[in-house]
Image 1: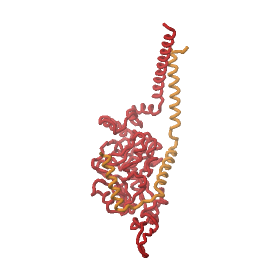
Image 2: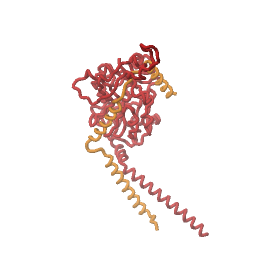
Image 3: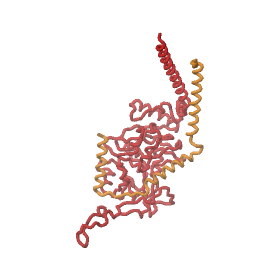
Image 4: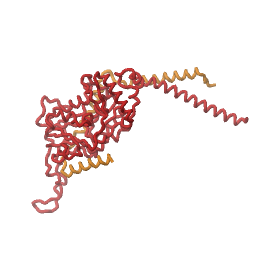
Length: 84
Length: 353
């Protein structure tokens, strides 16, 4: 027969708290930054390298007068459209 | 009472019992989770300690744009108090709104830039970026060989049938065989360590957030923590950012920076005049980027990078005003388009005087 007493409820509650607390601390340990901040620096440097890659190997093309006008018109249209 | 009826009642009783048990477990687990979750524990600790990185109220704070005026006032008051305590100086957090009838644009003269990186350091100082391990920089200066430039702008419209010495036979002269006039970023490098700049064989091209009019980062953000304001500047609510880095992935210019670790901002170097969406100190695990110095530009001042530039290579202004510097650059200079295939309509223009 199932034990529905208050005592058993508290037992279960404490057990649940224990499990969740253990999980919480485990996640803290896993996500904790390493002792040195070197890993953060390395990851940051990797981000910068990605930017370098995104910029290199491209071409900055000079716009003709028509293109410049078109670009400005597009920008202003977008802006007014957003405002509307 | 029939046997069937008794069984039915027992089943209903069991069901009620099951629900009761379930609710008990839910309550117990929730209470335990509240105690165990490290962030919450930290938040609870923060309530008593003004130096703590987070307070309970901040932890449960909503998106700033959706707050009522009273909530905004309380949030700002809370932050000012916490930053003042943490950095030991009176710190202000402004929430000045974007000016009306303004669309900010920026122009940079590649032929003038000398690659001194003063803009980079002025930006770091103004915007309270992490100073070491790592020194977070929102501007990267690229060094590009001068041989990469071609100015055959007169041939831009060439490549179509034209008259030759042999007569007009409609012969195509090679289809768009002429290389488009412009500057190739092939062999560009950003970690140059020159003793003296400028190197006469190179151009320098600072790259930062291009403040796109159709920003892909904004579309990519799953929680709308990043958005574009009325003046065309793309901003981030650091408290609402979940650090998923989707925006960084979406940016064609990779102009966003992620705080992988706790930012290192020395107390004595902290700039106490901050804006909620701008240079207020950030926390670990959130994204940041150039905001055109929102704390300055919303007060009718120029961005710090522009002020620091010793050669006047940077221009900033209102694209809606035909008399502004940026509009004059667009009207009279050789302006480049860069990565326009993404259709993001950047408001940052590179040009040559």
